[in-house]
Length: 133
Figure 1 (tube, rainbow, N blue to C red):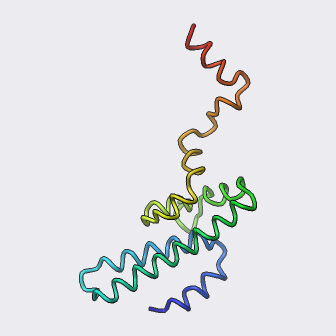
Figure 2 (cartoon, rainbow, N blue to C red):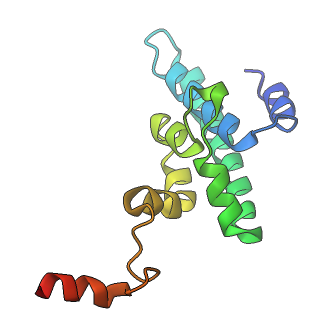
Figure 3 (cartoon, rainbow, N blue to C red):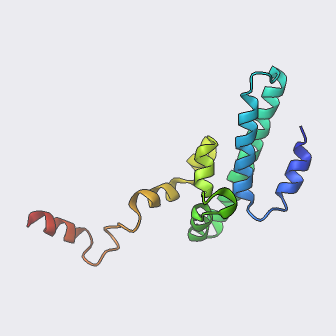
């Protein structure tokens, strides 16, 4: 229930996106406890949504400035988070709004890696030639 203090501390941290996603995850977890009163549960979920929106807003701003650097921020593993990336933290914390708005390029990169047929020497035509042989 110390949301203003949490926001003040968040504004001064080194990795605010990952930290906001972690806070959202903690608030959602606390809201699921059986002994939490219904009014408190609503408040905790509201706080979780606020932190997720803060992370989303910051990420959208970063993507508007530089897509490649924003992707690097999302995919950089952190020793403070056991090597997890911001995308991992968002997935673990069920931050669906953040995932939908900010993680598309990062997830595409994870699936394809450096396998981009349009940037290869022979491009798509090389794949077609190999399949014909």
